[in-house]
Image 1 (spheres, helix red, strand yellow):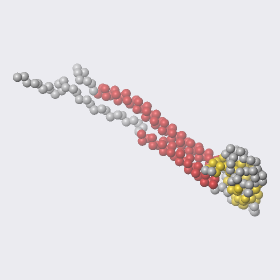
Image 2 (cartoon, rainbow, N blue to C red):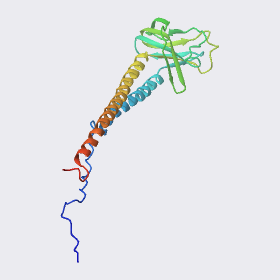
Image 3 (cartoon, rainbow, N blue to C red):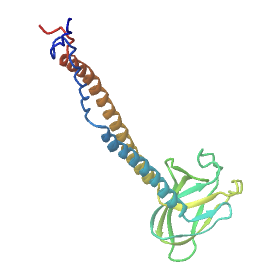
Image 4 (cartoon, one colour):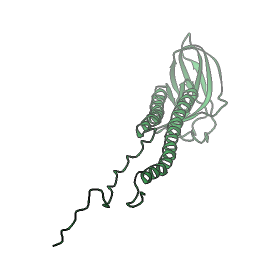
Length: 220
């Protein structure tokens, strides 16, 4: 009776398939996305906080109603900006009217009142304003504000007296814009680097896997 023969170990049987090689780690890692993302969010936060702070600053300006007029207290000598607040402030479609600033009591004194030569506007909620005049105060104190010929202006219009907000707007816009641009650029750079390295790593990983194993019978 014939006895079946057991093949010797490794004699003609299929070779074991080696485990797949772990993929190469791509640098920079995904954790680096957090750095430009935080910079981007910092720019957004700077913009929001800057606008909120600027809005609170504008809300604190002393005001008189138009055409009723009234009194304002100006606490320091030097330059002030007079803002018109009301319909037409954003577009500049404001009916012509005169503004008189008169000392209400000594030692208050006005040095000059002149048109504002550049365009500065703001809009915070329902409050819209445009710079219309520059006021130079020689001595601080209380001043009476009169607006002859302003009877044709819409109800609810005001004149606000304060400092120039142009610098604050510029600083907030520039710094927040730079931070947001830097954050966005950083995200794009990291994404491009990771995509390029991933594409280069795929052919290298395929070649390494092919050289690590060959089919049975290919050895001499």
